[in-house]
Image (cartoon, rainbow, N blue to C red; front, side, top):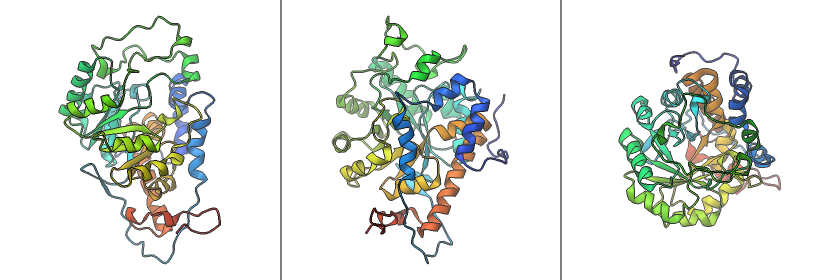
Length: 371
């Protein structure tokens, strides 16, 4: 299969992200679909991530001129068409033959920022060569710091304008479905960015393994400083849930934080990300941009995140569904649907710009708008 033109007409019967999930299930192998769909443990947090957005009630203001609605923002030096960012997700060749190349094409067509994963199936240099829009690189620090520094340099040379350090995965999560399926990459597919990396062998049977050979469990705040010292671009921390950790970011040369529970794929029964968002926003007190991911499926979810103080949101599963169904055009379709729904929500809320999305647009428990 060759690359899909991102401008191609999307499936005409798809009008929201939920409908893409069912189509992706039909297109993917059961193992690949289970990998992207599943969470950890009993998947309580997986459900909460989505449900928590729906529990937040909006308080629209009316008789506001919304003849012009502006979703643009500036984020770490980039002018973006909307506050919808494509989160780092692994192994895109499980979902489309061209993998991350299609993803970065779709992101550019949607005027969206894409974050490539360390565990991509297309090398960072190839992604950079295909990119015509802004993109960041997500970092898993390896036990071999020299290899990690070299990978960071490759990403920067390829055009990555920021590094996103994922901090919430020191060990494996209890992903029962993946363990049951003995999930692995198909023959001929590899973690292209990790070619040549010597892994630490694990002699334990799969059911007893706690450590991931591609991750270093010794990473601490010292390594955040180390990464900033070798990087030529800003460093963003992804996986922050606690206010005290958010405050510590202010002392470690971090450019932004991402409130994330890794798509509920690591530690089950942590809170939904929207429940953690207000505490992180308060802790950084406007000194850093705060982004949030987890369970975002509608433009109203995006609006609620910004009302609660987020600068932007990241989406993962929805754009992977789009990638599986329609390649680059499917990725663009997802961003466009969320952007359109956000514009609708802003118009109906009486908020013509992102700056107008303030806490007075939330309904409190007493039945009155917040003041």
